[in-house]
Length: 151
Image (cartoon, rainbow, N blue to C red; front, side, top):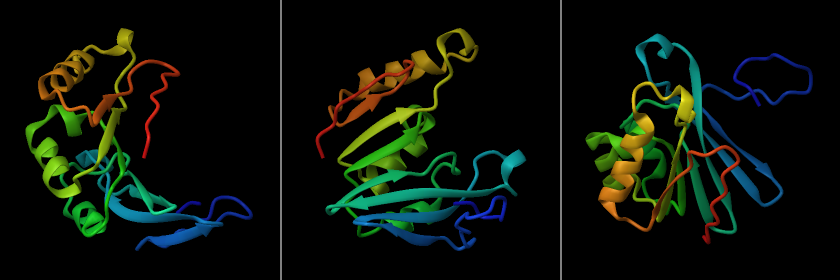
């Protein structure tokens, strides 16, 4: 699935997004703005996966606190949110996550590898995870790391 025709047999995603059904799995593709001014014109989609009445939200690299994301999840129970780490480490995105998305559980990822973390993102994420002491939250920051979650 891509928003532009690139390969034969591909599913073309309309820029306004759509729902794709694969058996009982529904993929809601959500048009969102990419984070960062240099990527503003990039086509970007988040996804909400729905299966057996459970919803998993993956907004990807969307702009933090984007109202379109809040509108997409309004009225939906989000069982698991997979979010880039700034949603945990920055105050406004964290408040947006807790107040507007309201996931039952959230895992934060997209951290640099330890040897590449010149800005201290990893310690900041670990600090906020410990500070919040919220059992709903987890951090994915090790290669091939696994966290078991019951939804």
